[in-house]
Image 1 (cartoon, rainbow, N blue to C red):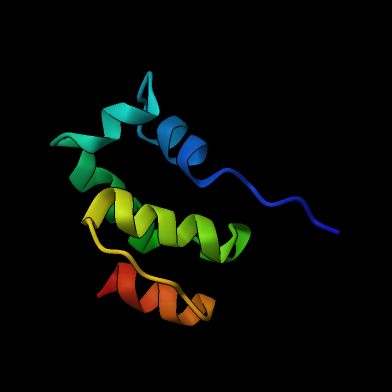
Image 2 (cartoon, rainbow, N blue to C red):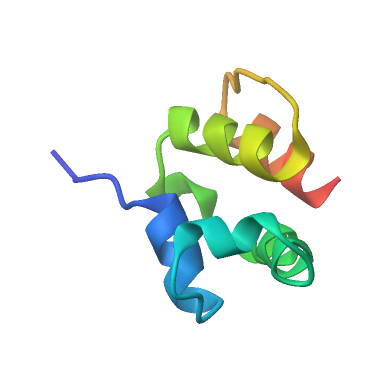
Length: 75
């Protein structure tokens, strides 16, 4: 079984943040949203993607598929 990657840690590294909490604030928050729109989301659990939607967009969602998550983040 493939181990799921840590979405927030991957975003932190990609955006050169010292802490995950740094991504809550602009301009890094907008950069994180743009990165989510470009990423291969299938490396992460649907739960992690729902957590990201809540963290960055303030919406409580439950994704049923990766295509639904991709549509949300690219929308």
